[in-house]
Length: 235
Image (tube, rainbow, N blue to C red; front, side, top):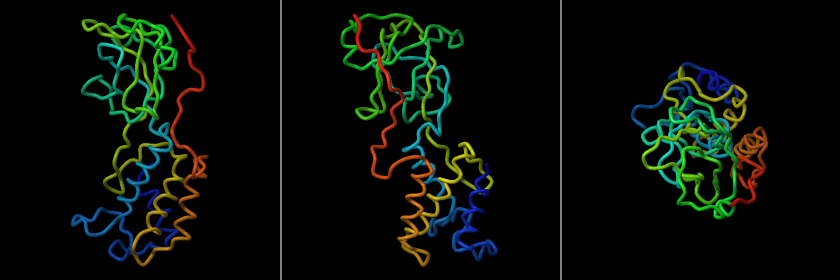
């Protein structure tokens, strides 16, 4: 979908569909930075969506691991990923020394379970990984760790940083099913601001509608858990 598709819905709710220079909430970014626009609010909505529903920005692809057990989440500069990750969702399977040769699946383990292994062991095939987004969303562990002189690729799923919208014709890079929650967040931003449109009761309504549409309780723990099961031990 295009940003303008969301802006039309928002402007209809605000009864703000006059000529561009008459709109209280313009669709274009103000070059002077003195006035907020729906572009600014939509970018805020995308950032919030990425925090509470990282799966909305999920990417699955092969990445190159670094030597050793400790790994950073995908980054194009270090791991030849296509995008920069914010959260790891899964480490799926081995992809050989070239990134295109499917191999054995990789199972999730707790870090305590991985402690039963000898972390000095290196290899070219990963058996397990451990990740705790609450403790450190930027790092995870694999076993065995890749040797310093070998290329080890694995298929991972991760949440990518949301792309910014710059104009009404920009693509919004999420599924159309997220249009409703994004609309509610933009309206929340409008009604919660210090302006003539401010209305805190309406702001709270749209804030709650945003979370309800995503199936999230407003006061609940919002950390994303990629797996329910884990390897419990090993030698």
